[in-house]
Amino acid sequence: MKDTGFNDQGHFCSGHNACAGCAEALAMRVVLNEVGEDAIGVVAPSCVAIILGAHPNNSAKIPFIHGTIESAAASAAGVKQALIAQGKNDTTVLCFAGDGGTYDIGLQSLSSVAERNEDILYVCFDNEGYMNTGGQKSSSTPRAAATGSTPLGKTTRKKNMVEILAAHRIPYIATASTSHMGDLAEKVRKAKAIRGTKVLIIIIPCLPGWGVADDAATKVARLAVETGVFPLFEIEDGVKYTMSVGEKTKEIGSYLELQKRYRHLDDEGREGLQAEVNENWERLAEIAGK
Ligand SMILES: Cc1ncc(C[n+]2csc(CCOP(=O)(O)OP(=O)(O)O)c2C)c(N)n1
Ligand code: SF4
Ligand SMILES: [Mg+2]
Image (cartoon, rainbow, N blue to C red; front, side, top):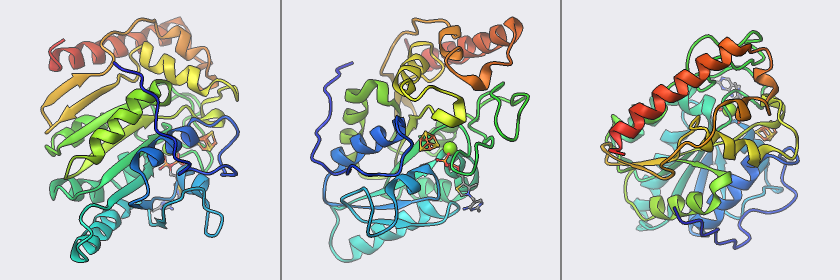
């Protein structure tokens, strides 16, 4: 995997509203800079909407429409259709949403957009919970993680959103992390060049939501990749899987110990999570033909 950095054109401004040290602001910076000036966004209620801010203080250089969580993807598809009607076929339409907006509340609208293969780039900032409303669990929250609504740890596994999307046979799906910035930038460039529905899911360690130190978001994001908790890969046309990082090199303990949401776990709990990660990894590696 090439780590080529990204093309910073100043499309994400300073003075934004993210918590200091938030990886989401960095992810937004990479995505907005790679997408460029000829773009319009729709954003669902989420941390990303807070970080973008309200007019006239918005932190993006391109216009964003603040939609509802349920309909953000459909709104983005509507914007694209309006642009096509005006002959502006090349303008990129973005949809930004959190995991609650993607895995839960906006799933039906994203599914319809994917089924129609609408030409939008949908970016899910996956911080594994409803974070701007106080840190409740979403269906993206992993097993055992403590949240505001699962204080003893979630009892079910993280929903496999990537496979749900793959079943729609859309042209491009990828997972990404700010710890692998060149890879993220490359995936945005690739998605931008494809016509149809493209979805990027970016792992975002949330400082207050995960109980991560202010200076540790990128370290935790890197460990999510290196332990295989959040594998980086691409899926083309719903069937062609390519691993972006082909090996997992660390045990899960190094990842868990940097987060307060797992501090209640005993050895048995940690071993259970390691077994789940191993099983998911082997299954993915087999599909990807590694
Ligand atoms: C239908 C609906 N239900 C609830 C809300 C309140 N709400 C606003 S943002 C949000 C959390 C969304 O979580 P997520 O999409 O994961 O974004 P995050 O805040 O974690 O970035 C909720 C529940 C809403 N706006 N609309
Ligand atoms: S609550 Fe979490 S995801 Fe939201 S801005 Fe703060 S650190 Fe970032
Ligand atoms: Mg979230």
